[in-house]
Image (tube, rainbow, N blue to C red; front, side):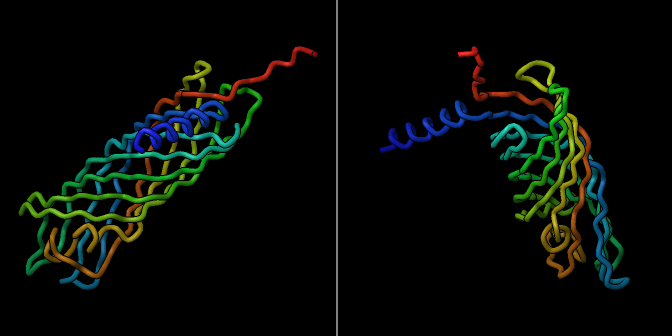
Length: 222
């Protein structure tokens, strides 16, 4: 039975490869700092900064046609967030964060006369799995949140199958920092009722590889 399922999956992959185009993408972006905060009163607040750093990952894209594609991608960022909060006294801590984004992305390419240049734009949505550790007391926690994003970029094809990618990207995790990421009065490990969304802008790029492409038919005149 397992062999039958394996054969079926292999057949589907080969079919997609023959009749369309599959691309492998590798990413390396720099994500900029983003502030998170909540304020109820002088004794009920937190504020912090999710520090910028490398946002890396990859994806597999299936081209529905020459101008449209859908991609399954994974992005990872390891960073930290210095936080100030109130717990009897004003306190400070640093939270180590590991952020894993798993998303589906739609892409629309803009055709140009020069086929070596392929501008594109698209939207993304999926989930973020966030792990955290309070470096002061060792408390740990994790949460899973919805994430959405948008990006604009260009593929510059240096060969028929390899392109250099340049792009700007925005990722947002709504209502993530707070009870979900355990920032707040009491530090990591306490639950608070206020939240702050995360918005991270990044610049970077990577490489794109065409793994398979629909064969082109040559008109012989017959």
